[in-house]
Image 1 (tube, rainbow, N blue to C red):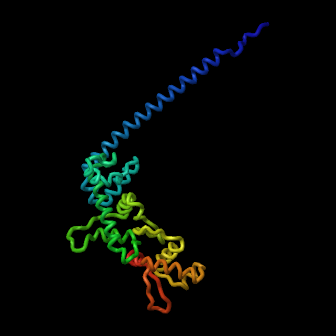
Image 2: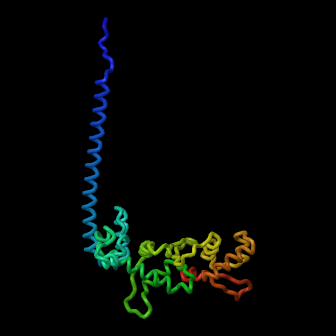
Image 3: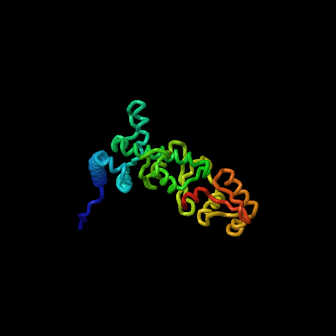
Length: 262
């Protein structure tokens, strides 16, 4: 009895190749369709965000809570409100803003952070002789809210989040302004010199205990006396700690921590 089964021929392989090619084309069409739909949705949302920023520009500038929520909304869709902080400089050099977001959000939001960044730089420079270029963000916030000395109505109501965003906009300056966490508090470092691990450890101890002495570092950090003295000498030379020699043993205080605690 002859078998009805037919062997697999070249036509079967050809049909399989055609089906595979059809599936690939269909998949590509679906991906293109989905990408176009997402692009249209994002375009609509961006347009709405642009109108929102123009309509509520006054609230964004004057209300810290409203401004923080607006910034979070921008971040949720990948919009950087700081990307156009140099919009003034761009317009002065031919009217071409360097950022799509600057055009989309309008100048009001970007100008706010630009102005705030300028004030942060001013505060850091004004206090550098006091703190050696290390100042608590809470102290910067207090000084900016208070305003310039002798200027009526010169204060800006800002949050620590606003200051952090303004510092991010200063990155093109070459990293001169950086944030650093010591003992649970955030500080702005406005000098190009990096703290080494020993210096950071001592400043964190001061942040917790209020001050340090050489014997305290020997007892709590298990350091040799020479190591403790070397670290302190470097911090004193950079004006990052103040010396109080009135007690039985010389104490070293951080001016940044003193302001932050006040």
